Length: 73
Image 1 (cartoon, rainbow, N blue to C red):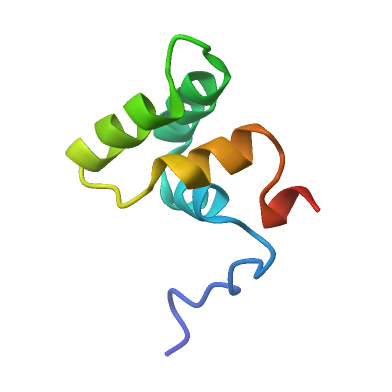
Image 2 (cartoon, rainbow, N blue to C red; image 1 turned 90 degrees about the vertical axis):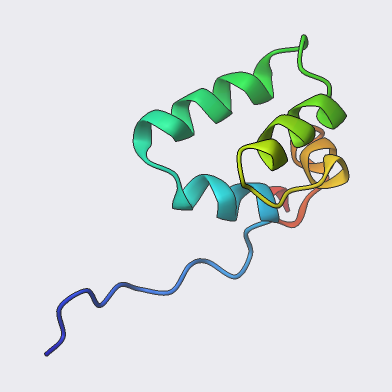
């Protein structure tokens, strides 16, 4: 009856952290590396993630990268 019951996600997470929490460990590792890679602009990374079916904007990525999002507080 209680199969699949999971705790709620932390409400202090930004959109990027919420996205990362939904990914497989392998995909999350790829995302984390892309976030650190200066060759990816926030706009370019958002466009690529959107192309792959994830709804994330460049401003959310930029805030997360600059530790200006709510999960960094």
